[in-house]
Image 1 (cartoon, rainbow, N blue to C red):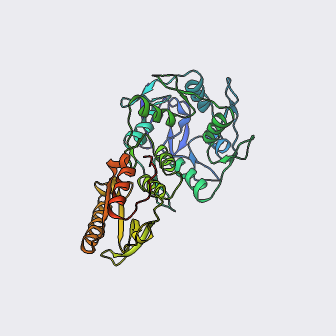
Image 2: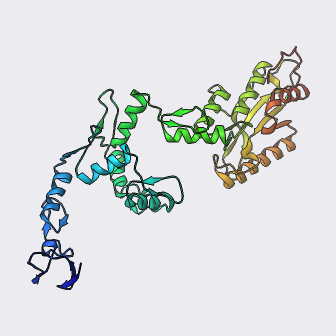
Image 3: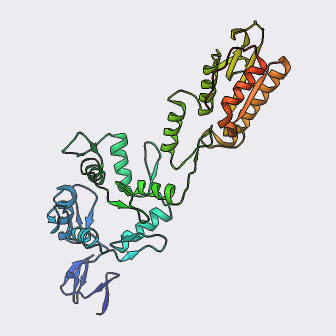
Length: 373
């Protein structure tokens, strides 16, 4: 097949004569059409095409939303034969010949593989939202984000319930999970099944790899996900608005019938002239026995008092927290106020430590009830 140069462009197998670019193109093949000069323009957008057939297909698929190609194996329809073929090959025939060398992904076409590598492994995000500046890998994702987040457009509606969303695959996932209870994701190491790949990954990391990277900020408990951590904190504190360690201190003091002020301000300010809060302030005059004009304090130090924890603000928060602890300690020493510092590693001994501290530093003397840790 010979190549011929006309109007400074290369034509292969030109069959018919045609007047393109003001030049005669002759030979065999291609109808004399020059691929560098798109002479058909869409009247409804900026799309241009070399051939009238491509223009007709564009208008039918993009503007008229005509899906004239039906999958022979399911009810799904497509705007072009090529999309229908890709669907059959990937979904029904499981033909995905283009495998990623960096992970287990396989694509139906080379273009899908290149997009996967670009978006997943290279993390290339060039499409910026003009409203909130979030970056996306694909223009389609940006368009969906704008419609769903900023314009609140949700064109896909569930025909069983009131659920609506902005993407067709999200609607299908909703129907599969909520209404059909489909558990299509299977663990390779046990009988666990899940409704989503994300839940399957969480299961595998937590159960088989024993990865628990979410540390409770106040007690030794470790969780495999942030959701599990938040549920742990609620259970640990029985819904009380405090840390799990402070909740155990409350249980101990309540069991001893000791009145206290929790998370309250008292006399001490930080370097910015803001009042500091004490975990527990106890006025010994409120305790049974001979009155004594004195105060005692109890502070529970979670992990963020000793090391950087992103959950609380990292290194900057750690430095501020340690400064506040030093100010409290100095304040109590200068005024002779007893203070109990409880380390988060002593979480299991909180009841014992609180009982001993109250007994030694107050006139609490009635018969103690057994305090459960």
